[in-house]
Image (cartoon, rainbow, N blue to C red):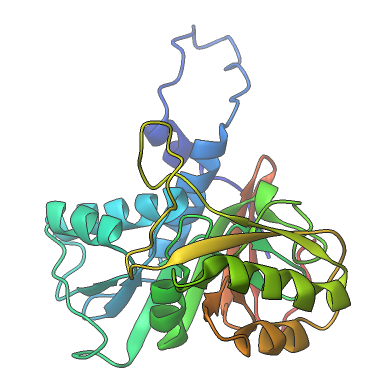
Length: 274
């Protein structure tokens, strides 16, 4: 189902140029950040008072968390409990006054909202380029409904189609051994290059990136369509040293895609929006 943008909504997000009444307004150019915000705000329409919410991580999810905080301050939402998927999201939510808890206290979550790095036609996702894939998968896997928010640049024909990283969280112990085993396994699924993610510190950011769980990330750069994603998932997870991977298969209930021509909403088991 395609929905046209609400001009008043967009105008509230970006200042319009002053022009005489008889002059048509100039065409509005939406940035990628605008598209992320539009998708995030549309997702927050699913939120109701009294819900337990999974709060996602990343540049798109940040807009959704901010919107939830705004609606709480305005009194339009109440009795919300948030379950953050990362330390960064926890800090943001606390700064906005969103009450927080965890899966131990709330093992069933009403709704999770998060972004994605890739979305394929079957609503399978790649997540974790921000490094929070394990907590995201735990929380979103415990959700009755998982709404994914993306801009149209994240849509791919197959997982790995963006030629960017498919993250795998690994234990630091002998990570090179694990990375090599990942590369060997992936030879049977089109091949990949496996690289340790850096940026965890040091003068040049040359130290390993460390997740909130104290693990490393090995980024796999795929060479071809992997084929059977469930088979690939099982093969990766069987490797000792692997904690979790960034393929979220069959988990998304709804994907909201913001693009220059409008917002598209794709629901699980409905016809493709591509």
